[in-house]
Amino acid sequence: MVERWMVALGIFAATYVLISVARLPHIPLQRPYAALLGGAMMVVLGVVPPLTALQAIDGGVLALLLGMMMLAAALEWCGFFGWCAQRLRARAVSGVQLLRSVIVLTALSSALILNDTVVLLMTPIVIRLCMQAKLPPMPYLIGMALAANIGSVATPMGNPQNAYVASASGIPLVTFVALLLPLAVGSLLIALLILPRLFARDLPAVLPEVGATAIEPLRDVGLLRLTLATIAAVVVGMALLPLLAPSLPLGVVALLGGTLVLLCACGWGRAVPTAMVRLIDWEVLLLFVGLFVLLAGVTQAGLHRPMLAALGVPLESRPSPAVLVLASAVLANLLSNVPSTLLLAPIARAGGAGSWLTLAGASTLAGNATMIGAAANLIVAQKASRAGVELSWRTFTVVGLAVTIPTLLFCALYASVLLG
Image (cartoon, rainbow, N blue to C red; front, side, top):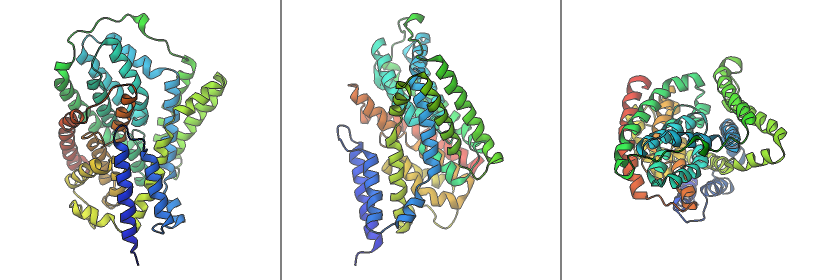
């Protein structure tokens, strides 16, 4: 008779192979559907009971992701990201200054809105700016990808793994931001110091001037103001939620805000809400559903114990910040940072709030090391490829490691002092 752990291991390995193949350019497989298939097989083959599989799906995380993606879709429909990028181009006097501007804009946007959505929307805009200014797109695309991950460290709505950590740990928004914002800012400063130096030879010292008339106007200022006001209200609501309704997940506030903007957009014409819905990255939600069930099967079968033991992570005691950072760095670049966070969740749960926050920061920063480390990196590569721009995996890894190593060292030091 085949043991349950053997079945779970076979499903997990096969799913990982499918997800890995889906990461390669020009391969038509999609990561979300591979994860869904793996989760379904865990149920069909009896590794996870159906009720347990449903309970493993964190509705709060899905609500948070969907709500923030709805708000981001409204911003994109209004032309907000393109308008910001064009303003930065008009003010930049050199290629390096424009690179710094793109990095900062991406990091700030990713702190407030899901980073995967930010790069999904900004990649075509950045490529268009580079083509217009006759600039090499690779420095800006790599810088944008790394900045999206770094900026997303600061908040629960910055990336999917942070959303999961905030939901699973119950850490209030104010506490989450207060403790991880310094880590994000410090890591951003490191990136701003390193990236311009690495790409200085590839970027022109002087850019041609661009007149203000070259900046495309916003599509709808009224809807943009409503969306920005709603985002501000959502952030305030998340901060006050532990005081007003501690039993509700943060995702409820985000989903209410996104729904409000979507309903109000109906007054701007029938095409507006339809276009907004199409801009939502539904595959991210499907990916999470599949991963929740897949990792539930790994846990139910006890496979997580030998996996973590092989990395030197203690199973019965609180791990040190350095060990948790190292484990996150390895797993994020083997499994990508979202499934690695789910795999390390039981260890973080045993370690308390400090371990949860260390996991959130380390798994996100570790994703910058390689193109497969984070979904945002893959989205940039895929969108760029469709636009005729191929990102070099070798260049990405060299640049990514140059930024990731010092930021992870900073993360380990920061976690040991303030989070440990």
